[in-house]
Amino acid sequence: MATGISLHIGLNKVDPAQYGGWDGELVACEQDAHDMARLARAAGFGDTTLLTPDGTVDNVTKELRKAAKRLKSGDIMLFTYSGHGGQVPDAEGSDDERDEFDETLVLFDRQFLDDELHREFGRFAEGVRIAALLDCCHSGSGIEVRDVLTPEAMQEQFQTRDPDEIENASRLMPVAKQVEIYQRDQQFFQEIQRGLGDKQARNDGVNALLISACQDNQLASDGPVNGAFTGTLLDVWDNGAFRGGYRAFHRDILERMPATQSPNFYVTGRPDDRFLEERPFTV
Image 1 (spheres, rainbow, N blue to C red):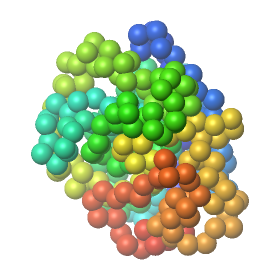
Image 2: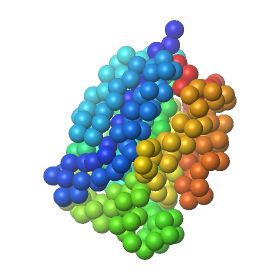
Image 3: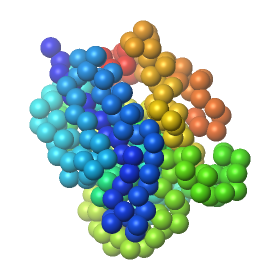
């Protein structure tokens, strides 16, 4: 009998003391986490939900490490995140990343590098199925951010030249704030990146699938109840009426989204084909 563990993170704000006075207020992220936890429970997962002040780096890593100790081959880990996304320069300067940027999850106390997330995924036993759902900007690969989102591209997506309107409507950590925080914490981030070693070797050792809210060079929209991606995902899932595998699930979500926000299907390592073909959220 397989075991399923799920972790759901939703941040409607971040700690302004840690982000230079910016609180990153959003509307729907906590509701996203509640709804994904409800879906997971109905599918047979044990679930943990971390909301706004509890969505810290220590709490996220603690829950992932607890799950990694418990799960064995054939079990499944479901990880969902709703909040802001950001980018920091990749200190390693990887040849496989044209823009040399790492994606971040903007947690309550600091940005959590994609390198760090996949280090935690790498702690799981071989054969554990890992599925991640990220409802944030820059989430197309979850590992390698290939295209920097320019101000022009942001304006085109949101049909406005008002940066405040773009930032209020999307789950983008403001670019100016990203630069400010990186300049302040550059040495800290670089030490983490270098300490994690070769990026490609790490990625090859983690077998996981990701369905993201958008491509690497797109923004993810917030909403009055759910984020655009999470709300569409829930509609497609239809309280468990959906039939089909993860690829079909992604395709049906994609078909219902606007062209400016195109959810991505991404795998790292070599997940078992049977996992990719099984009905989503199967324990």
